[in-house]
Image 1 (cartoon, helix red, strand yellow):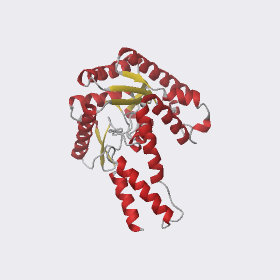
Image 2 (tube, one colour):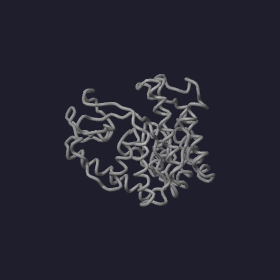
Image 3 (spheres, helix red, strand yellow):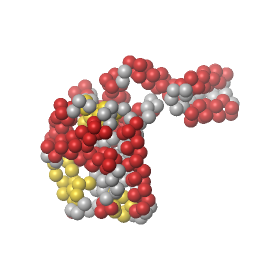
Image 4 (cartoon, one colour):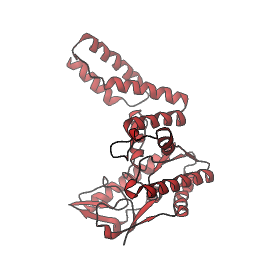
Length: 301
C-alpha cells in the first residue's frame, strides 16, 4: 500500500503470481493517510460521511483515491466497505504488509480534516503543511503496534518511494523524503516486526542519473523499476522463491511471444511445450487464464 511505486512493485508481484492486494484504496502518499485506513480496516470503522463529495455526477471520499468511486453515495459506501473487508482479510491471512511512503506534506480540508486526495476541489478549501515527525511516527506506530498484537506473524516492510514530489519544490521534496527516512528508521528500531527496504536510496545512489527517470523527471523509468525489482527479489525472497519467480517470469515471457508464422510447425511445438509448463505450474500457482488462452490458440491452428 502507498504511493504509485507501491503499485509498480505490487504489479510485478502479481505478475510473479504472488497473492497480493495492491492499493485497495488507490494511491496514498502520506503515512497518516495510510495509518488512518489501516486502523479503519482493523476495527471495521464505517465511512465518515462528512468526507463524501459529489463531482461530475460521481461520489468520492477525501480519505481515498478517486478510483474508489460510486454513482451514488450508497454505492461509494458499499465499495469502501468491500475494500475495507478485503484489506482485513488479507491482513488476517497474509504474511507481509508493505508500505511505501511518498511524502510528509499533508493537506487538510477546512471542515473534514486531513485528506488523502483533494479531488480537484478549490485550493482555498485546503491548508498544506509539513507534518511533524513525531505525529507521523505516533500515527503509524499506533496502528502497527496494534497489528503486532492482533496479527503477531505479520511482517511489515517499509520503503520510501523513489518518485520525486518536485511539485512541492526541490528543497521541500528532499526535506520530506529525509523525514520519511527517519520515520522508517525510528519505527524499525521500535518494532521487531518492521524492516526497511532502501528503494529510495537505490534510486538516489546506484541510479543517480536522469536517464533513469522518465521525461517528467519525476517517475523512474522501466529500467530503473526493473533494477529495483531485482534488488527487491534478492533482498526479500528466499533462494527457493527466487528460483520459482525466475521460472514464472520465463513462462510469462513465452506467453508474450509473438510468432513470425503462427501456423508453423515450430510454433505449434512451442505452444505444446508452453502448455505443459503451464499445466505443471498451475498446480501451485493460478495459471488458469493463461492455460485456457493457450489451449484456445492451439485449437484455432
